[in-house]
Image (cartoon, rainbow, N blue to C red; front, side):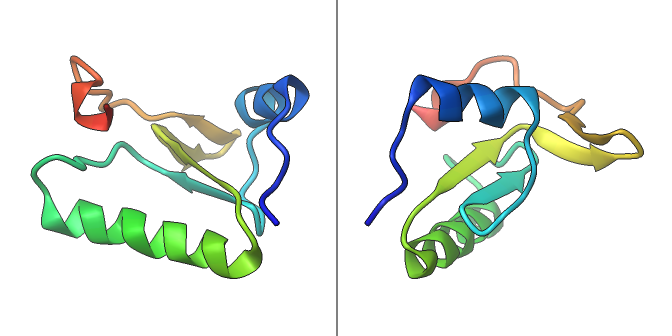
Length: 81
């Protein structure tokens, strides 16, 4: 069974994201042209599916303050459409 998506759960993902069994956090991935990045995303999705579902959040990186927005945000987000 997949995790229930509620406005509260989505807010938690944005306000205080933490990697967990149902949450994979990745830096910006080029899912349009980069085979390596596609493989990273696929591995994350498979791990979540093996757990029963979850979320992949893109655009964050680890810092001394925890997970923060990654600096290399693409000019557009069309590669994630």
